[in-house]
Image 1 (cartoon, one colour):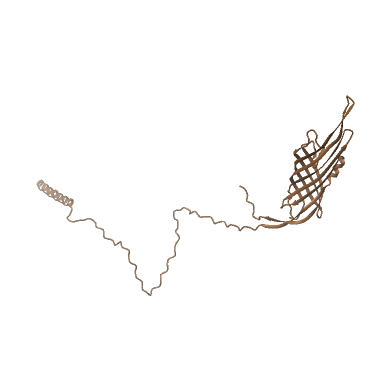
Image 2: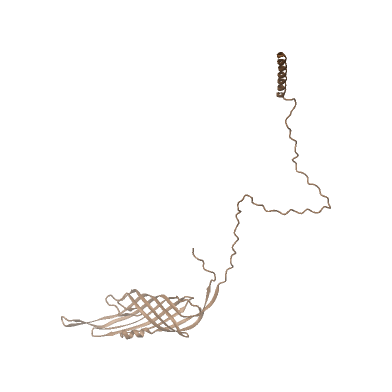
Length: 297
């Protein structure tokens, strides 16, 4: 019985080994998967019958950014405003003539001098005025010590700037400041003088001959002119006069330099008061821009 079992087991093992050997041997022929050839040429469009309705083009669709980022948009262009035309208007221009009445009051305080001064101004543009002045001085003094005589004329010319803001362009009132140049020519002499010596109880007479001189100075002015009656103006001004040069004889200064004041000083303060009349002679064309001024950063 044991023999019979061993015999059967040997037959079974032989069969299993035979099947395993057959499974490891490849069958004849190519068993790999082959790809089917694909036609890559562009397909021909299908022909439509002649009676078919024409095809409508599909509306173009805007590309949508699906990345999640916002697309930068350009700000709308700012419209450029049209340039406004300049404003043009006319202001009265003319010659204002006046007389300085403060010179008459000066004679009351300094009787030895007589002064006469006339002033004029003419409008140049909206704010600037040309200013002129002509004058004459005569100085005469006599006492027990000396006798002095002098006379001469002067002229000043300059510009005044009107600081007054006017609602009405035709208004002629003004508050102004200016700078003027002055020139004077003077002749003076001392016909006789006496030098008293108290110690010796003596008197020494003498004289200075007639001398001609010229002087140059500048004036800084500030004042106002107000129309009291139609075309009649009252005005006042303060002036600081600064001497530039003069050729007076050394040691023999004039008592008065016409238009300037004391001949022994290098600067002089002065006050004037004028009455004047306005002559409307012309008109000035004023052009102003309507464009707003740009603000500085």
